[in-house]
Each structure stands twice: as structure tokens, then as C-alpha cells.
Length: 388
Image 1: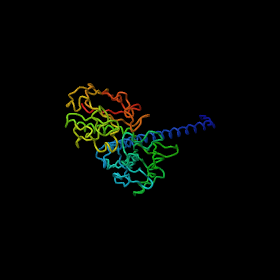
Image 2 (image 1 turned 30 degrees about the vertical axis):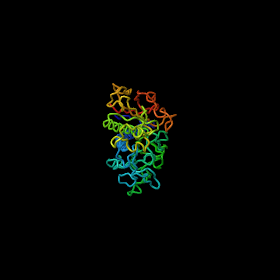
Image 3 (image 1 turned 60 degrees about the vertical axis):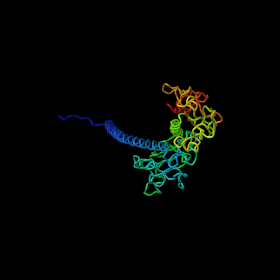
Image 4 (image 1 turned 90 degrees about the horizontal axis):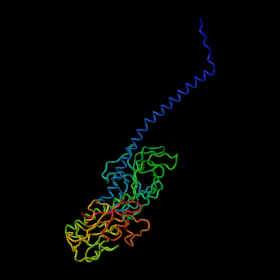
């Protein structure tokens, strides 16, 4: 018996074709998704590795700025870039060497910083640009400003470090110092222009971009430098006290010589003849040369406790200093130092009054009570207890 099978019509054939097409589309989409998922973890790992590398470079640069062993001791100073490709900075104590086309943009001086030759995930050495104002040719202190910027934002930048990534279209990277010194072969968008403006992402949706940046902002660097300055001065004052059993008197606002009538003020640069009855600074106790040359002496406030000056040696008198927001007891302090920080809105520099230096009401009322608060936009006083 012959089985009857109806002939396939056009609709049946179209349905089969659609099913085959749908299968192809789903298979292609699955392949694309799996391919992307396989690539993304690798990209994430590369970005994480470069971020860690940039963090290492940032920490080393900050450490250099805080170090006392730079070629010319100047807290806050950043090394010049490496233009010669040997890992050492170029410029010594004079202006950073400048290339004809690319000013202050070169390779990270890894050897100067005591690092291994840091290479990103593409095997490329890091690029680096310090602020012109922090290369050692200008005074560096809390009031230093910089012209370096990121992404068009007003916040001042101290330095930028860049991992260039793999070469993009048009970025040939042949051997030879001339080619390897050309940022256009490594960096994209504004980063390749070697000017004072850098970007963390492309400024146009059609611009290829794979630079990864680490930034040291001016305020975060100089606040760290202020802590380094206060720590150095604390050590010098403790040396003076150990030798003489009292702390020196201060100098008046914007003064330099010790004043026997002063209760608080700046740390004096010289003790005699202003205070003839006091011992003079010794090499171990005297403020370092950069303290005055960089005008930190006008930005640091100093208060010895009434109990701890010449008339009552060994802090045997009455009247200690209280520093609020410190561990108790907080009212047994022998001396304090305060870094004024950068001038805030309405403050004059050089200071015309104590209010031009210090911000918190407890710190600028000229008594023996001070306050240690977090640094913020309203107050950037930093308090250092000398003892105990």
C-alpha cells in the first residue's frame, strides 16, 4: 500500500529556512559572547596589573619628594624625567633638560627612584610629567601652585605617570632614542602633545585611546611634605631640649629672631642676640637650611608650653598645652608645631595676622589650647605635638 505524503508547500520551505537562519544567528551570537567573555578577563587583568605598576611609581615619586637625600635637599621637589633612556633623571640641580619639541614629558626615571625598569602589560616603559613648578627651580612650600591639569579640572596636579599600552593604529615604535622619545608614538589624544593638559579618557568617541594614568595632586603631595617638615622640626626641637632642658622662645609673626617676650610665633632662625640668655642652635638642633630658603619658616607656627621655657627648666613650671582630638591625656603637651597649609579663600600671604595662617578657631586664638582636625576645604592646619 502506498503511503500518501503531501507535498511541501512554500510556507513549509520558508519556515525551515527561517529556522536554519535563526540557528545561525544564535550560534554566531553565542560565539561572539563567549569570545568577548574570554577576552574581558584578560583585559581586566592587564588593567589591574598596570594600575598596580602605576601605584608603585606614584609611591616612589612621593617618597622622593619627601626624602632628604635628593641632589639639592628641597622637600616637595620631584625628579626631572628621563630623556636619555637610561632610567636616570636628566637635569640635576638646574632646570630639567628640555627637548626641542617635548618639554617636561619623558620616561619615568625608574633608576633614580630605586625601582626596577617598570614596564606595563604591553612591555612599554612608563611615561612621566612633573609640574614645572616642582622641579627645584622655584621655592617649594605649602603655597606653591602648579599649572599641570587633568581632564580640564581646576584641581592642581603635581605629576602624571602614564602606562602607554600596546601600539594603536599609526603608532610605529621602531628602535632608536629619537623614535622612543616621541610621545606621539606611545600616547594618545592630549597626552601626546606634551603640554600642561592631560586626559584620562579620549576627548572624542572616535579617538583610539588606551593610556592608563596615575596622578599625584598638588594638595596631597604638599600635605605629605608638610608632615615631613613638621617631623624634621620636631626632631630638632627635641635635640635642643635634650641639650638645654628647655625650649627656645618663638619669634614674632613673619620674624626671624628669637623674642624673649613671645609666647607663640614662628620658630626662630637665630636665637642670639634676640634672646641672649638662651643657648644658640647647634648643628644638630638648628632648623635645616631649606627651612628658610624655601620660606617654610613663615608657614609654620610654634608654641612652647609656659612650663617648659628657660625660667622653669625640665618643664617644672605650670602651664602645659592642650591639643584636642588627641589621645588622653591631651593637656600635657610641652610644645606644638602647626603647618599652616595653602592659603584658603580670604587669607593673605605673607600673613598679616595669625588668621591668615591658621584656620581652626582653637588654633588662631593665641592661647594654650589647640585642635587637631582632619584636613578639609574649611581647615588645612596640621598639628604636630613635639612632646610627649
